[in-house]
Image (cartoon, rainbow over all chains, first blue to last red; front, side):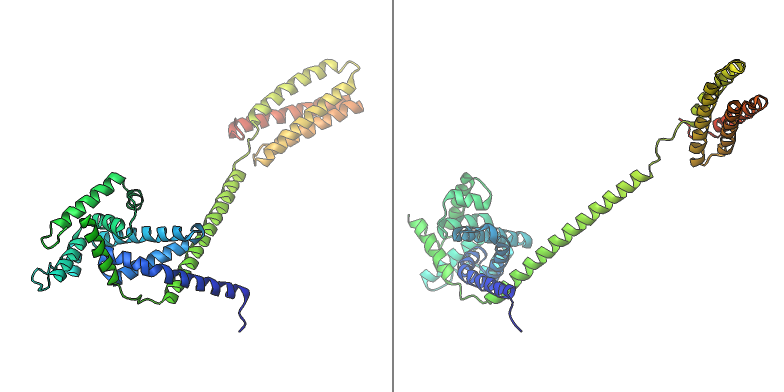
Length: 172
Length: 182
């Protein structure tokens, strides 16, 4: 069996796509994990986002454009994910568990409480906080991703931080 | 900015919890290729369906236009005007039978005969029952014209009467059957 030029080209294309996935996926999974709190879900979302990105690769010539597209798709997919479940609260509580107030180590307890508080936030507030404090995006970029105004972004972040402050163990 | 720093630290620590990827990149790439192929196939099928539908629609439209009946002549009115013309011709011929312009009379009758033949052909194509009468009338006109040309004075008037009678019968038939009504 000889490999034809089309097969070779397809093979090269596959290799490049594999490299692109290997380059983009870890970063995307971390973002998706912060948004969903579950690695399996995060990997599923990143796979789906990558599949969508491959369909639009001809429009994404720059690496930064690919990253931005992947980031935006992951955020949208995570919002869809929680919307589909329609039981976001119960899901997050099941994933995160109740706040471990009885933990012996104060730092561990604080971390767990903060994690629980973060995952308990409404998805838009969580997205805004993750995009601001993890991705370091400006308000305008976050507003673009969340399809809202910059004032709304500031409001979402402010309310999210207020909710985090409301958790007794979180000293922020 | 202690608050921001705490949140950043929390997010960094949480992101560090993510282990190595459990999915094989090859599998994801295969899925991506399969989806691309599926998208392309769906797009191609859609284009083909739209094209075939468009062609079929255009074809049926053209077909329906072809079936639209062409505007048919108003046979009754035409037969009536022809009868009036024949009556006028008869008067002229009667007046001119003693004169010398026989060629003009003969040509007039031939013209009338052609008109009656034309009407007969039109009615015949419309499957009307009066085409035979009109043909008979037209033949009689032809005969009258030939009689005048040949100087057969005893015959032309008889032919003309027959022609006129047949035309009158055909006119009545056409009016009654309403073939090609306007």
